[in-house]
Image (tube, rainbow, N blue to C red; front, side, top):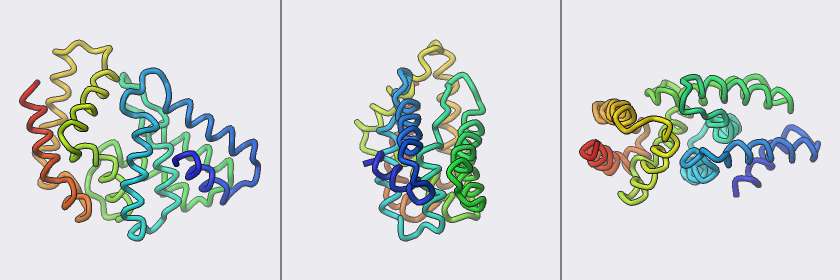
Length: 204
């Protein structure tokens, strides 16, 4: 599904089939890298399903879909600039195929917003960051599989370091007045997300 979605997206800007194929292979390779236990193509597929549910509410659909494919393009658990580098790479590829600056800039801002997941005055940003956090509100077993995947991605760190950092993240989410910024995602996931986060916190 995601391959067809990506190819259909970039076909709006280029008819170079070789280039289209190379860009997809590049994405597939990045998200299928050995260390990707959560931030993988499965993550992209899950976000795509969530965003399709609210597609009629989105203002700049193409900006969101480019952000979907590139928001975790660069992912190194040892670095803190993954979102910035991913945004820069997205802009590079979007410029390469002639995406208008307005859409490119909007997509860059969407990717950067996934660093903090803060409430925004921009509707698209709130939908996109909510979709990115939708894993938090899944059924407990799916959530547990997510936490296992994230732990494997950070396997370079011993438990005492990982647990300390993870606790900080969980507490930040739990202290938010609302984790999800849009009514759609809040109604769908808010209650379960808080239960999942509290349950994980109790294990650390």
